[in-house]
Image (cartoon, rainbow, N blue to C red; front, side):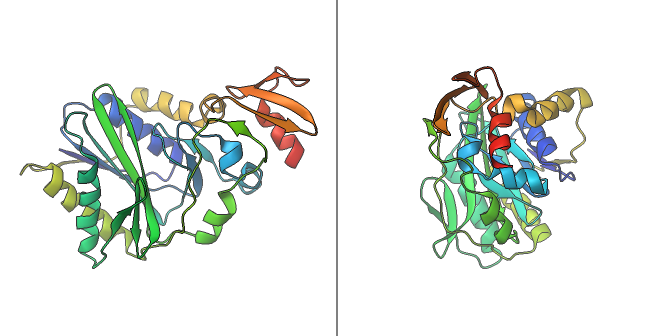
Length: 273
């Protein structure tokens, strides 16, 4: 049993650590990873950023866009949001156990939460946690957000559609009314660590690590997270019309129309900025 708590507020580094733990750390038993980031927007693996967030506003205000390795919808991150990630063997994984771990931790603060929709956690009908999943190499990753003291005004500003009329099979986010739990973040982190030991520890003593991993293992994943190839190029194929001109976009590049061969990102920003 391994618990890792990141000291970094870099969204790209933390998503890279998640992937490193998923792909590399196979001999430590269940893994719990806790992290936060500065203001950022993180979309699911199979989403279209032009349809999910206001990239023009994010660009103007220096808010990074990231894409994670799991599915699910687009979420806003800042230092008032605590992210938790549980990694176990595929055969051991039970979705409900991860939720029960969170519920148990929150009950220590008198918070009675429930699962709503496909993968949200809510209190009194208001969502405070969205969850997503990844499965590969015999491993299962279950991670989620915990809105504790997040800036709701900025959350509402950045999540939305930048360009209308996009035709795509990309996964769309499902809007929900959200709320902060208003809890002390270090206390929630401690409660989660204790709850992780109860639900995944089998009576063992957890091993704690900081976020110092081999540079050779993390650097390439950080570079990938920051790259346009991943953030924009992994967008599923889509089409739209701009000023009456049809465009087909594959892996972030326009493949049909007068702009064929150009990065769609450059075209989109030139239109709105």
